[in-house]
Image 1 (cartoon, rainbow, N blue to C red):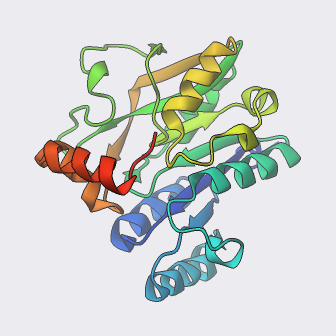
Image 2 (image 1 turned 90 degrees about the vertical axis):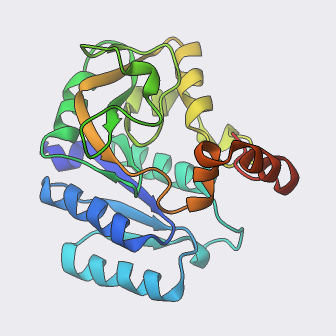
Length: 235
């Protein structure tokens, strides 16, 4: 089985097409195809994704053609991606639209995933200067890859077929917006090992598609007020 048949790679996209296109091209240039989930982008940006589909051979799923629930629709994406991965006997790789992989990034995650009882493997995120950044600040002192007992993000993460077979994403709480923290803890609770690769880094430009989330760092009082009063960012 060639490597591109061993993993199902997905990328949720919500506008921010400059960053998203950079992220998409980095994956295809690494020799992989992927499925892009367009989560209610503007008509112009949806058309640009369709153009990339024709150019690069990626698959584009316009969520608006399936459900009318407003963005974010991460639960729907995860359920659909899990179904497709399991149908084809594949691991699932999630790459966010503000993350640029490097040549070999996904290959290295695949190698680590073959160890016994691995549930998830994540590549550490760094800024343009190569410094570890959000959401893995807790790993700044790490010098080698290892088991992670904290939460993993879905910035660039592989979920093994064994874990996908063990936990049905249809059980995820539909009232939440984001599920990376819950799923990473769920994997550990089920006896799986989660690995963070400090030697396998990806460029992360946080919250390019949802700039209001940057308030968490620039104006935390306003961020948490909006989170509370507007029901945003439910983890």
